[in-house]
Image 1: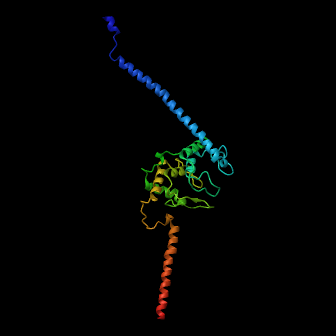
Image 2: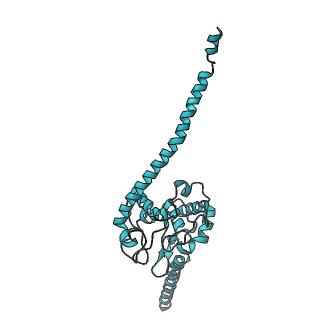
Image 3: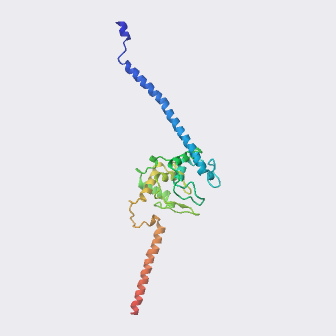
Length: 269
C-alpha cells in the first residue's frame, strides 16, 4: 500500500504540467514571432525600395541623377525624406512638365502604391522627414482659434490670411490652400516645398500643425459665413480697395454726371 501511494500523483500535477507547456509555447512564440514579423516587414520594405528604384529610373533620374545626387536640371534628393516625395508626386508637381520659376500643381499620374514605393526608395538615399500618419494630420480635435493665430503669424504673409495664395518675386507665387488635403498641408509644413520655409517638429510641434490645418479647412469651408458680405476672393485690402475704387468711386462719378446733366437741362428749360 505504501508503494502504491508513493507512485500516486498529486491532483494538481496535471495542471502544473499544462501551465508549463503553455508557458513554453508562449515563450517560443515570443522568441520567434516578433523576429518573423520584423523579417517580413524588412522584406516588404526591400521590395518597395526595389520597385521604387525602377519607377525612379524611368520618371525621375533624368533630372535628379541616377542616384538622386542631383543635376543641373534638378536638385539632390538625398535627405529630402519620404514626406517630400509623397507631397511633390501626390500633388502632381513631380515629375515636372517643364522647367520654370515654379512647378505648378497638376493631375497626379501615379497611384498611391507607386508613390509609396518611390518614397521608400528616396528615403533609402538619406534620412529625412517621414510621411505622416493619419493620426498626425487629422484636425478633428484641433484648436481652430490657435491655428488661426499661428497661420497669421507664420503663413499669411505669402498665402494671404485665408489661404487664397499670393504673388511672390520673379514669377513665383504662394499657391491657394483651399482644396488641399490635410496630409499634403502637413507635409508642406514638414518639408518646405519650393519657396516655402520648413517647419519641423522642433520648430512647430504636431499639435500646432494640426491646429493650422483645422483653421485652413474651416476658413475655406462653404459652411463658414462671411460677416463682411462678399468675400472678394479673400485677397484682403488689395481686392477690397480695387472694388472700392472701381465700383464705389465710379458710382459717385456716375451720379455726379447725372446730376450735372439734369441740372443743365433744368436751367435751359
